[in-house]
View 1 (cartoon, rainbow, N blue to C red):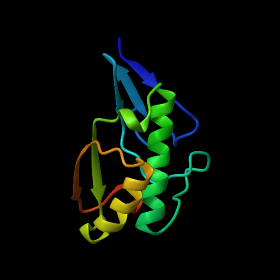
View 2 (view 1 turned 90 degrees about the vertical axis):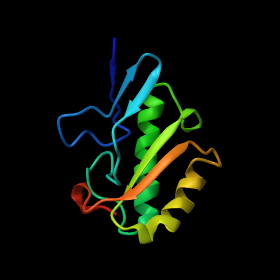
View 3 (view 1 turned 30 degrees about the vertical axis):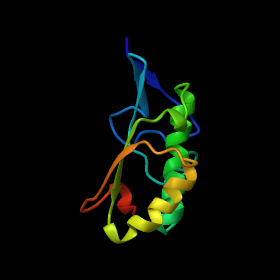
View 4 (view 1 turned 135 degrees about the vertical axis):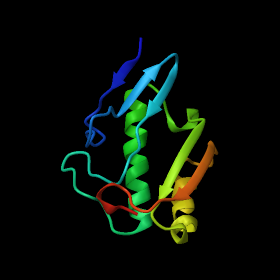
Length: 116
C-alpha cells in the first residue's frame, strides 16, 4: 500500500500532490524548488543558492521517508537556463558528496515561482 511522506522540514506541496510517496520499497519524491520550509519564501537569487536549498528540501523528504541521498538511483534537474548548468552541477556534486545517481538535466521555459 503506498504511503504518503510528510515532513515540516521541507516545503508543503503548493498544489494537489504529495511531498513524496513510498511504494514497493521505493521513494518517489516530488520536485523541489528553493522554498524555505517554514515561510514558503524563495531562498536565494543565484543558481548556487537555489540549487542548495532545493536539494536540502529533497533530502528532508528522503529522510522523512527513511531514505538518504546515497540511495537515490535517478534524478531529474530542470533549469530555466542551460547557462546555469555548470554552477548547478558544482553544488549538486558537493551536496551528493560524490555519489552519482543516474540523471537527466534540461532547460524548460519557466519553473514554479520563476526559480532558476
